[in-house]
Image (cartoon, rainbow, N blue to C red; front, side, top):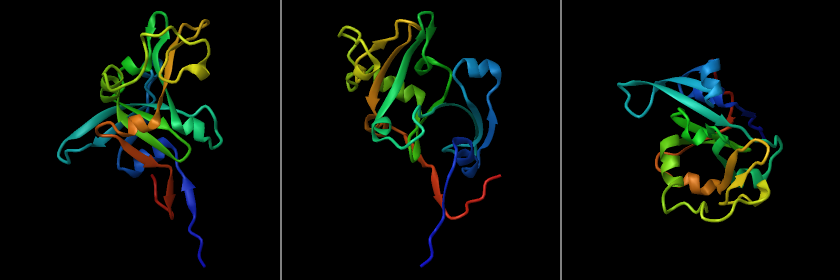
Length: 174
């Protein structure tokens, strides 16, 4: 019996495997929440595009069903600065234990402000981050306003892609 090796790849490695040219974002873009600049073909094979990606990494390095099930959304970074959901990124890549959920930021924002989303701005802010499921937590120190939504809600959005971290066999990356 032969055992097939599984390798776990990072977001830039996975993007390169999909024929994107990946560069780290410059300081000015990093301050705006952008992590990577991808250049390549997206949807239309005759048109090259430049894509700005914000990668939201897991806070917990070990596998966690809870962390994979719930996704943080940042509305405000501070009292004077909007959160990454209003930033310049074209796409957001949410890291989970075994994959990345890739979603168009504007599609996600449209969902968050629609009647389909259950985030409750009409209720008082919650006292702790663990209570922030579809409710707003306002951090008293930083002024950040964040919430958690189910990852499965993001997976239902138009154009979402899931990039698996583990690729069977020895896929080449440059």
